[in-house]
Length: 322
Image 1 (cartoon, rainbow, N blue to C red):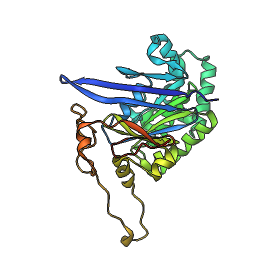
Image 2 (tube, one colour):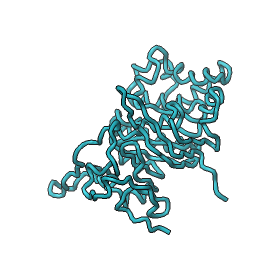
Image 3 (cartoon, rainbow, N blue to C red):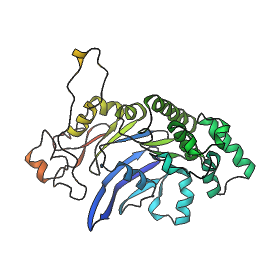
Image 4 (cartoon, rainbow, N blue to C red):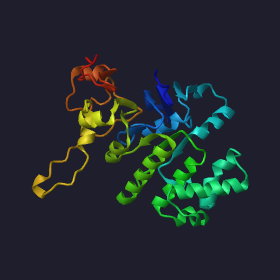
């Protein structure tokens, strides 16, 4: 018997009007995510990752496509029903300094979603905030501090505690590691894993840190100029990337060499990602692809299955998987 996915995204597109032009931020994105799994979302800046993350939660309602959460279409929900449903869908933003209320202490910042949804008595909320602080590795005394008095890692722990306050089923983590030291990043990754095991959480993990994505994710989706160009189970994608863009991304991961002689040449991608206001014809990656062919310049490649659960949008891919 098949298990219904927690999150089901079909043909999602989101654009913006910028100076009289249309900026295509997310283009025809589809994927599913089961409870307790993590989808890593990678790609260069400007590829649409953060916009997609916000669209999944209907913070940025898309023009076309659907998001089903636990079988329920978000597009069909009233404002009141959507607000209630958002208890199950939370987000940890990249910059806690701008996301946290600087005029409220840590306790009030974490308590806020409980107040908004009118959950518990004052005493019960105090107990819940104390429990959340402990769960994310902070002391109860940190509740009296203000965000600016905490380190970056402590601020992110507060953000995670606030996201967990409503006991969600899905958490979108939007570049939450980007401003942290490496040692603190490791602590945050361990915390995310622990919380996932304890609460059976599903994550959409958006990051430029490919090593972290490979470590945390069960599946990885690679975005380029608003589209998912490759999607696969993590081990399979890291071991055998098919799309030239994916291959270049993962070749860019730095490894500490045993000696100076063992250093390999750095792999770079020529040029920059094109403007989403003027998406190239055909395959959007053809302007930078080292294997470009004539068909790439004129025809947009469909997403085909090349192995079990492995999908690629590239004319060079062989879709002979049965």
